Image (tube, rainbow, N blue to C red):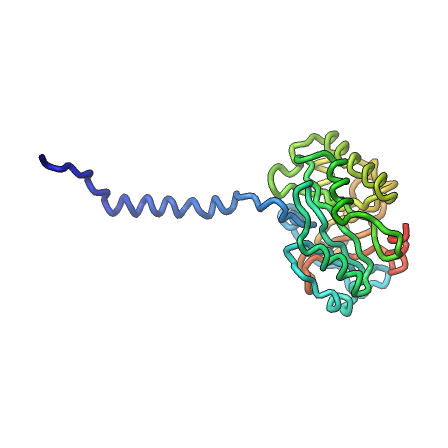
Length: 268
């Protein structure tokens, strides 16, 4: 009995299939979300707000700082200190599923180098409640001590790198989530947390809510020569993230005041 074999696929067809498969790869790479836990302060600023200049240097009324996360690894704190950096924030946690494996070197390293240090939490309002995440943050490095060199914790609330920019929440639901976090953090530590955000995100995702400005210090993200328009409720900013391409670690910031004002915030 003769054996019937399938007809071979023409070479041209094979090439077409291969090219089609290869053409999917860049699109898939572009739409793939980053791994959970990899978010960091200012991750979405360039994509959403862009960059438009840098602030002038040598302003004695502002104090240079940096913010770091796990992707920067072990930080050369003495190098930063010698360059004029006086304060630093390190990412401690994200959601209720991630802690920074470099947190000890970053948080304690800044302190040991002589800087004033603090910790921040990258919020994911679509995963658990604000209160739950505040507790997780405090339990994993986000607390406060009255030693004159530890700043209050920061709620990093910005574009969602893993999905919808506003985490699928309405303006009112987002404000409620943020309030839940801030209330719990204050109850746990006795301090009002700093809010890190960008004006455009705040406007889009909270309806430009104005109710936190009288209590919570503002850390605004804007990569430009000035801070621009602030979110509703704040007439002044406390900190300003002005670039992601500064020396040594990339993310550089200005405190709106001389070093004595940084110390005052640390003291509460």
